[in-house]
Length: 485
Image 1 (tube, rainbow, N blue to C red):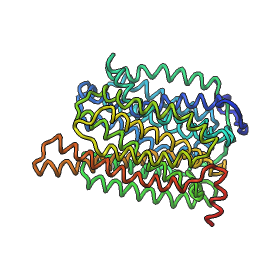
Image 2 (tube, one colour; image 1 turned 90 degrees about the vertical axis):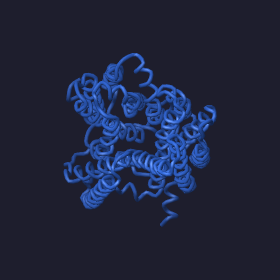
Image 3 (cartoon, rainbow, N blue to C red; image 1 turned 135 degrees about the vertical axis):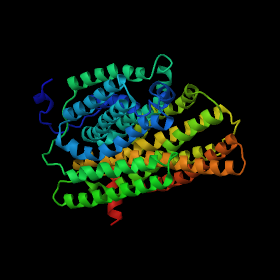
């Protein structure tokens, strides 16, 4: 594959009808593999602690660094995707991911392994906005729900399946096998993609503003890092880092507003002028906080309180994750036929009901009840995510698709970090207070988890409110914005 072929000018996007476009199928498959690696290290922590002689807090950095890198790199992808062809962006994303995976498989030390995870995450950070931007360019509005439903298979199921997949693989070998198994699969997908992928849309020339790059990386990366420090760290240091991150984001925003006047922003914030997009952004962020909070709390409850193994825990939550992804295409078809409100409003209510049910966890709650509540949460999220992504991105002009996708994916990472930090902080504070009062370890932890679920349930009420404000279809956006003037 020559460089000339790789960077050949992109033609205009040609909307297609009928089946999911081949370019989207390729990108969904690639996205599934790269996103799976975000959570695949969770079950490997005990093995890594023994093999590399590191503490649990140090090992956790292999997951934290992945999320941190995503938050730092994704804001740059809006600018990047407008300057390179679809094939060049795909080659960059998969090339970085392959190199990081190969390096991780042979890493002689923790430091090298951590660096490999950062490289992997850099490739993933390019792939997600590339998938969303390409979808909006090639799929007609009337079919976006169905196609976005298929995309949810990669975005939703992959992180949910990561711990289960790693639990199975670790039964057959060391932690290195996690990367050795993924590497040939990713290489095959890369080869097939470069062979069949066609360029979509037009590219633009433009210089990069390095002040924007630095403040975006420092701001969003620092914010995610600071939020992660609340998990068992010094809260004063965490608050200081979060404050510094927010200050850098403020500088970044001011810089983008100035650059927008010249038409050269790194991340175009004019997407936020579109009311439906902003509503979708809020709804998605709070929903993601609810999902990630439950993904952290439920395994802690099952393993630390109910004494299940990591594999047993993964198998118990697997049906909910599978249901979420497999329902994606059905939700998409329903959206195309009936619009978003008939899905998003019941989905938002379902999220609140599931989290309210989880506030009642006990030492003896039947496993079928836990499985049912988790499945209800995942199905409700499936009913919410596909319409929200489709309506939100459909609300912005075509030239802002890449920027809208980048903002959406950046806030996903920030919401994930915030949701995790919030539930861990609430749980730990409550458990510590009870232990100080003489309550035994396990009941204290259980009560802390219940309070954390209460906080998540209360936050989910914001999902219900924003769901009511969201228009039913992207074509209703103009009327919504006109009425707000």
